Image: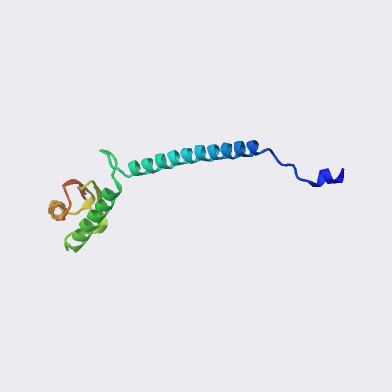
Length: 130
């Protein structure tokens, strides 16, 4: 009786092959599902970086940040303008100036300076005279 218990039970060869095939099929099924999921996530992330009429793409956002910085710097270099009172926002190359200036001449000068910066497609003047 002790001899019987000490010998490991072995499954017949056909059962082992069936189990291996089952495991291979299961792994392949999960691999296909994972691949499909990964592809969907990749595609969604790529589309998420694309711009639309109301949303900028990643590269457009970077370009607009550069334009904003250049416009602010150009306004700062202009002695008659106070950059602290002029706000600059850019969306797809369209620059919006807001804030307060002392005279209509300062307002015109700020618009002129903004238009002279490379990459600016248009300037919207929302500034007010104080």
